[in-house]
Amino acid sequence: MNLQIQQYLKLIQFQGSVEPSIKLLGQLQTRHLLTIPYENLDVALKHGISFAIPDLFQKIIIQHRGGNCFELNILFSWLLCELGFSVTNRYAQFWRNIEEDTPVEDVPMHQLLLVNFAGQSYISDVGVGALAPCKPVPLIAGHQHREGNELYKIERDGVDGWMLYEQTKHDWRLLYSFFDDANDARFAPRLSKQKNKIAMIRTLRGRHTMLNNEFRIYEGQSLTTYTTHNEKEWRQALHRFFHISLD
Image (cartoon, rainbow, N blue to C red; front, side):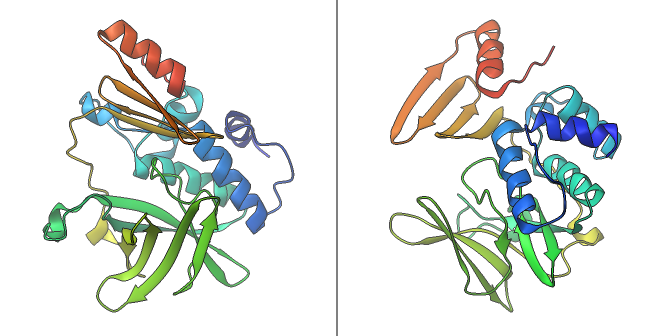
């Protein structure tokens, strides 16, 4: 195991066998989601972004930053491949909180990973940030996947391709959709035009979120909101809740 892999596993606090298995994939995915945040600060602050592995490794592993779905899943894909997994990138349309009549070209792009193990493909995704599966989801039409109080299902049709749904209080809501060939140049990464500063991370008891100067701490059924009033307070909260330092 080379030094970079050791650094990656140390950051996500993983210890154990790295023999490829679905159990290992689930452990790595969960540890990743609990330690590396989704965040768009480079986009919001108009800093440059590189998808090259050395640059992603420096930013996320060495500098203890997060990233958007492309950054996080590209680097996670590299880790999995280095450990011996068979991985394919897929670009998807991200439908959560999108109006039904939104033109397709205005629907945010998302990147996920398909991991093939023992002849079965699994969705493995560390790039959503908000509620989404923390474990691999078998790519089987009609399959339902439960994690605690969260329930997801996979569907497929000729119009939208593969679809991952999440159960809400009243119905099923489409999270994202993608096609079997959605890894070519037609689906190249398209960065969000979102100007708000966003950060999200899972925790053992819930999740932390940030929208500009408002921080929300979800723990079980409780919600605590913090509002920062200046740059110093914002940076302190950013470090406290997401372990991110921009210095």
